[in-house]
Length: 230
Image (cartoon, rainbow, N blue to C red):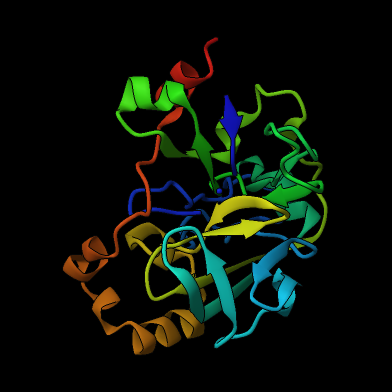
């Protein structure tokens, strides 16, 4: 099986509440928070060569699997602290060792958020799901050697969005761009959310969100287990 690599769809569980008894005394009524997908140091393929994700700006061009060269319309950042990751384990990053996904991919070690989706290309996917390319959540790949939950440490999650949901190269392996959804937009800081609505006014409605389709079928945990059961 060849695993080619890829963040959130309209039903992704990117929202997590800190527990009421957390060390920081978090109020459980606080809005749920989303964690965008990449971390600094991840190299994104562009027509100019690889550029670190933290250096990408609105208007930059990236290489996509389906639609050639596309422009970035939005970039988002969210900082999380060591305490955040200790009190809310569900947002701890997933470490993917170089080569862990097969065929030498990724080309370098990488950290992504747990609900960052990875592109899987395999005959098994075609057999079970009638598609040879599917998306799976990074958190569901931890049974693979070289993929594990990362240590809690201060970090920044970074993601970017194009006009459509795209699949792009990060550290040499295919990954997705940000896909907005009701849950994901709730976790974006208010100023960033307003910026998104200005760029994509259709996202302010549920009907508009439904039209922002995922680039591939997304497997749930049980389906991912079937894919890797052998």
